[in-house]
Length: 73
Image 1 (cartoon, rainbow, N blue to C red):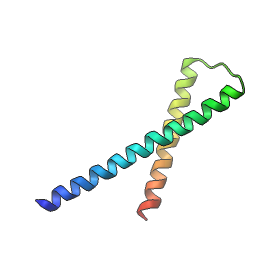
Image 2 (cartoon, helix red, strand yellow):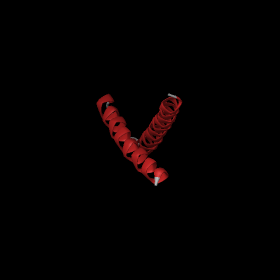
Image 3 (tube, rainbow, N blue to C red):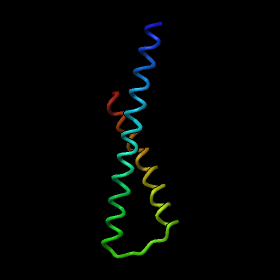
């Protein structure tokens, strides 16, 4: 029973680390893209910003999965 709870605790810690990495990388990507577009003085609609946020989330997910694979190997 103790081993099972230890595995659950390790799983939850790993899941929390993945979530933190995903959110932080998504914010970093979205912030950099937003600053670049602001510097070029483009006015974007809300739907374009949502698309950029979605792409940022996907790229953040891919980056997080890559880092997770590198760390575990």
